[in-house]
Image (cartoon, rainbow, N blue to C red; front, side, top):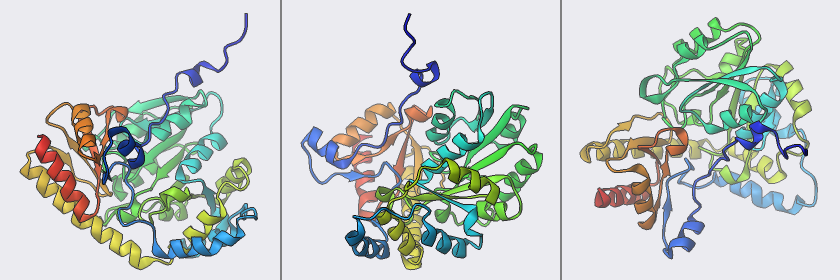
Length: 363
């Protein structure tokens, strides 16, 4: 009898479903001038300084990139006030999340994950045949850090936490994070996904890099995809104790970040004006969406990130499909076990108005 092609835990995996591209939507429905407010991208586009750096780097595409991203890591280290050897670069922060699981989790190990969190955490654990506990959510479907701490066993190796959380836009405070870290036994590593941290303006937010500096057994992952507008470049990083980074860099593939992405990220770190403008655009967009959701009597969850989770007054999948036919792409949340909810990214003022206009017409 022949062996099965793949292990059972691989066969059970549910592939990650990305947001629908605008080009695909327009081709399918025969429409033009659609807007995509589904994937938490920066509506202002890429950092202008990053674009100039990409153009300048095009002439070196015949060369392999720096496999260690040395220059970029040194600049990041200076900005964050850490040592370069505490940084691991990734093909987006997604790869750093995967690298953490691949490096530190062994057969028989256990992970703790919140129920309504970024689906990549489940994939990182499930694709290796590891066990996990999915903890019920706390307020507004966000992380209940105290419950996650109680779910730790003597087999637990890793906790995955998104702060801010995707898809809820909720945030764990510094006090909550400190209490969690104090309660964990030494073998446990916290992977803290901070993809949206640049958007947070709440003083109670716990900075993951500062937690690493204070000695926490923690990997803080960040990305250039969101506020810097470089989602198509696929570049992110993790900050962690130097010993952790040393082992993860042994597992990391060589040349995992390309030369254009490295050049773009290096330049984007200097584009403080673009970051401020992106944050201001997001702040105004959130206020507008909150006001309109209240006017339309739609339940929503206040967000510290660049998206809002809202509850549909009709079947969410039906509303999603009808919005598609209006040329408006949002994200249904069935894949996150929130079948009555949808997530909308904060767009430009014009995009936000178009979304609300389409939504109001359908409701």
